[in-house]
Image (cartoon, rainbow, N blue to C red; front, top):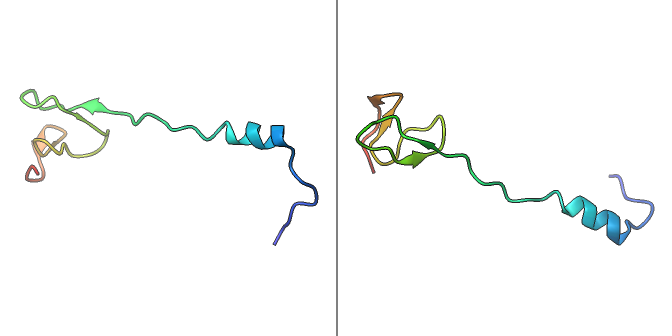
Length: 60
């Protein structure tokens, strides 16, 4: 297993850690005109249970 030969400086460590950012999840509105809830893309709507305009699951 590879082991670092020298200690990483504080500025290099902080520069590397600065890239660890929390990303805002992408949300889209449901295509069902009666629902219009926000949901993740390419996922069935948890509110009305439709995907691409047709019902696929029973709503939770």
